[in-house]
Image 1 (cartoon, rainbow, N blue to C red):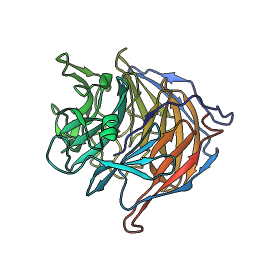
Image 2: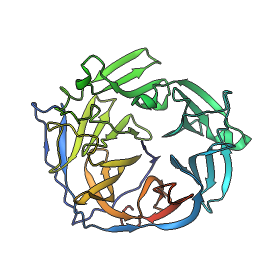
Image 3: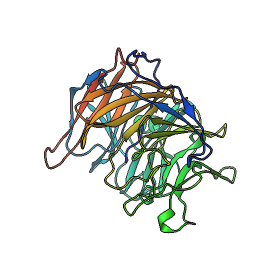
Length: 365
């Protein structure tokens, strides 16, 4: 399951042919307890064509970040789990997070998170080690010293038990998370949303749904499942749902929840999706101004195409574009206004994964 990038975008060009509905509803009878904004868009809008950068990786790139002039990628090498490339020419600068059992070493399961931040002039990235520990890595010191510097670590709910976790106030002991409600029968399990602040010894449930979706024998329990993304400075989160055409927004500091929903698509008041349901959002990342989603859009019977959809943090739809070739994880270079994406990787067809470049000038400015 994919997640997100935290950088800043200066602005965006509005497109006249894009259709956006500002209408919203707050139905007291709906299972979703908060305001919903409807959006629609022109599926024949601009096409973004990717150009190969020349960077190829033999294997699968799980997650990537762009921080300043560096491209940071989760890989699996004998030297470690993180490759750091120079963005100027895509040459390898160093490899971090070596395999092992010490504090500054790591083992599988391993996950690079998309939440990173600055503190006291230094940059920190977050990784999950052994599925149950989050480690804060001082990237600045690691690059300067030529070795991985772990500045802090804490326990975290396992990502492999369908938990979704990111952190408030850029503090790994202040969690915003989901977990399954285990007080219901198996056919009524669904995700709950919690703040778990271990600094202030405080927990709070955030009510999102009045009850689970109706379901048949094929219906999924975690109908709202999707990976969180976080605003780089504020305690704002968004959760694009993978099996429903929604993005749920959370403003933790102001106790506010709302969602955006694509017009004409199934709602939370309909039957829960099943395991064969079309996936909507495959990967999403955040900037200071925008939420950018890698969306699969139906263009015919059992056929989908890739789109980049852009929203702001108020849930307003700002634009969309079809793109090719198909890529999964995105990273964004704010200085050059360029989107990078690793192509979909199928080891049966190719031994390497290629990085493509998408010029967003004229789309994002």
